[in-house]
Image (cartoon, rainbow, N blue to C red; front, side, top):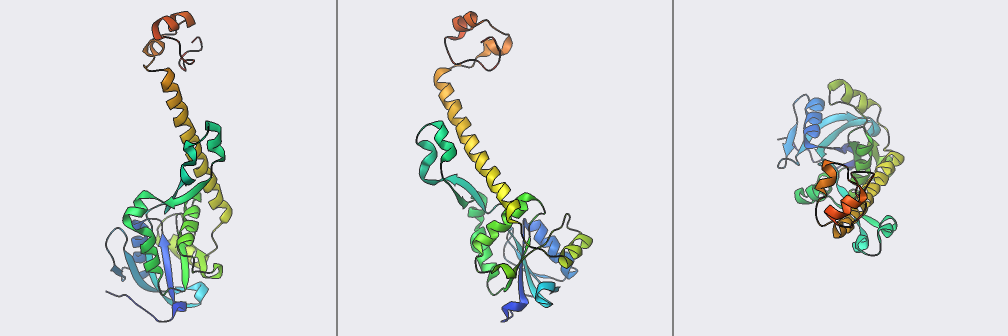
Length: 238
């Protein structure tokens, strides 16, 4: 097929979408079906020529994608297993390559796809999650200075939306991305704390409290049937 390899990086742009189906649809729309492709699914790269406004010229464009988040969040050095439950909330976290992205080699794929490109245009979905993934891509592709990085905002992969997005390219929003970082950290820490609490509870409650689920019991009855244990969640009387 058509895999342009211009020596001039200023005429070469990498487009990154959030999933392979979007990168394929983008290439179809921008090239009217006349694009070349390389690589194995799901991580294909499509090639076409198109006007790119920031470069003020017709450019060779490589369109590829990630598969959702490139990075996930984890605790640094097993911090969540030390100390009491409250220490989980102060524990340091780090970004680690997400499992599916690791298996598919997304980081290496992006680095290969970006070779020889002088511009980066981020076509991640137009929500906060997409904004966050923009910065994950930038973390992998550190070679692009801010003035060479652009963000396309679109709400559907239609000819009209894509053309509009191409004509009003902006910049990725650090604040929107940070909101997702905060949510991910909360999800991780609350999830681990809750699991620890359940495990602690299980030490006191070896059997399921079926009596309480079926009908409310007095405290004395509860102790007689189920043994002394932590307060039961099912009935206020326990």
